[in-house]
View 1 (spheres, one colour):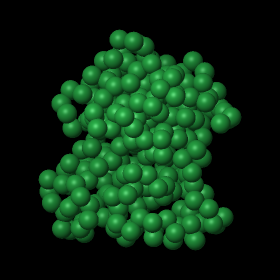
View 2 (cartoon, rainbow, N blue to C red; view 1 turned 120 degrees about the vertical axis):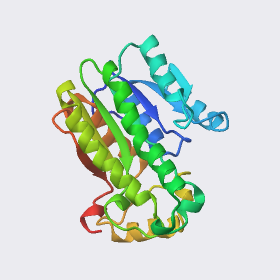
View 3 (tube, rainbow, N blue to C red; view 1 turned 90 degrees about the vertical axis):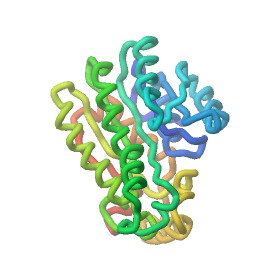
View 4 (cartoon, rainbow, N blue to C red; view 1 turned 60 degrees about the vertical axis):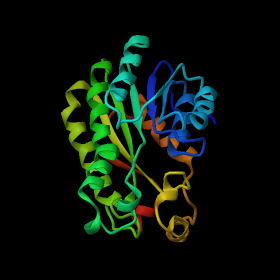
Length: 257
């Protein structure tokens, strides 16, 4: 992959790689191709065999577990970065979760516990990362998260994740305002549907992909590599004047949806 921006000398944290096909993997590959040094997390021991080979191909010097539900584990990630690097230039948050029963029912029938858990993992964890990253972004930086057009429109079977992603997008705007004086920029990348392990939990996702492809102006879905190039731009100095935005990486689908 030929780089389109220069991230040489920059260090970034990538949270959310599930395997080589995940959006976070596409973004991490673009960051590395542009010259960045990366820290990579994996969810747990079960996920590690799928993530470690990706991280090793990226020559990541820091490969650590991070389950945001485990008290202290996210903080430990930033402690490791502080000890080894002492600074951070950008981070990518690409994690989302909702309990299966709550995801596969209507919003009005979702449980309070499931709603709160989905909000904590999918949204508030980004707020926590922003807080922990701020002291390390001494010269400014970029905070990126991944969203979906179901935050703005009702998407069949997206259910609970719709309002959760809407909260995430709103959080991006407030974080951008909160951290503007630190020269820290925040963005949500609204990616078109990609066949990932996470997406497989959404009912009839293959049908959704076909419908989106048919309605996208060029009749073509976005790839993780294309999403990655946008993420690399937002992490670079060239993306500096932008902040608080929902940046669409969907081949124009949002213009006709």
